[in-house]
Image (cartoon, rainbow, N blue to C red; front, side, top):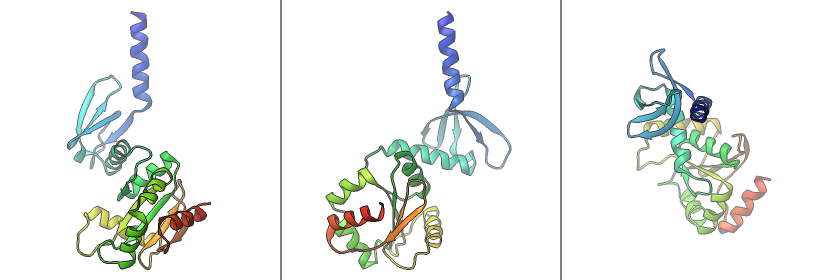
Length: 204
């Protein structure tokens, strides 16, 4: 009996240590619990009592919704994966967690000739994929003309363009794992091997 009570106590303490105070959008109401997973339009949290509860994602504050998106992305993208993120906040969290620099590709994916060449000659090659999945967190910051981006992504990209003073495409911005700018570059002839060595030199 004593051992069972100890196990229960330690279990509750573990939940409490990871607990988050969730805020309802537009009100002062809160609920405390640990994020477990996302199920459709709801999130599942565990209260300090050990009871689980479902909360509609749409009712959460903007900060809480961003937290859920980061958690979901972290679970969906294990270390060592080759993936181009489009959510900058998710990419920043990955970079910090994985202790990797970030490569931001400011591109006009469906109209910019040099952007298309850079993708074909470097970013879409097996050599670059092998290097990037172990050494970089990749972010595509796209400004297409033929397709329409989701509103949130388009607004984010416009903000990043202004922040990094992007004047033309392709523009490649390198950040360290803390999100601080290290260098900038662009298209470079010579294929993946030359480009990889170029990046390594910039990231020293």
